[in-house]
Length: 194
Length: 198
Image (cartoon, rainbow over all chains, first blue to last red):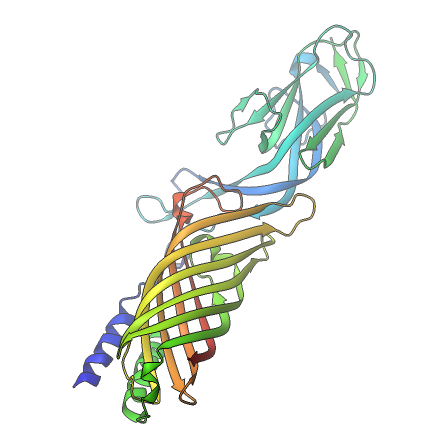
């Protein structure tokens, strides 16, 4: 009799285990009408790419700009690297269907310095550049960044003063992190109007 | 398929109880046992579900408090690795668990234990360019099912399944994403080893 009781207890123990639901995209199609859900994945920086855009373009634009007024010019700095922490959950809408998922890359390297320079003297009087960091919701804010993490890609750099004269410039971005890794990238040549 | 496996295991345990042989219980006065086992760890849950489990070693000391039960203190080390993120995590647990045995006088014995303690997940990136090390602590709830096969009076073979469901303490993590969803983890392992009773 005791042995039968033990057997029943063992069976109950095993049957009480709940299997974590696996995603079945055939039975659970993606929720097309739902707003997208943003994943954050963490990276360490390996490469920097700088490009010129204007105020009206979105970050992903690949148009080549060769002439811009200084206050329309943005230097977009794309960060790329190696993933170190990845989300593993699936996101469901309230009706149980799976929402569209967009990945946002976040860079954990702490900044020692960011230097921006031009290939020739840009402006003899003014502080020439302002760096804007992107938050999760695609807004850009300017902040004190020494010792802070790089955060979401890309960074946006704007010119805060006109050049002494309208001419061609190549801008170079140099990011140094707290482990003394140096990442450098130069933009294409652009004619900046003052 | 999995239900068939569960039924098979259940019937296997039932078989142990029916067909196991009686042995001398002359060693019951010496009730301190050292346990050493090695096996493979699995990480199927939440943040660590993309990690592959590798080896696991555990060392334990158990003390028999009465004929069918006692307590076991154990320390274990398991290694999991993620190819996606190139992160290696050492899963270290220290637990104390009361246990009960079912067939103390038989050659084959079945032991259930459950307890708690401390879990430490020591994670590091294997990228040289920006090394990050992180220690994450939590409290596990441990369950262990062991089948003990007496080879001699003092020596027994130990086949066990070890599970840890853990609640991680909150913190400012980089290698574990700061989302409450990931503050629960589950690891299990299948191990084989020996028990030596003093």
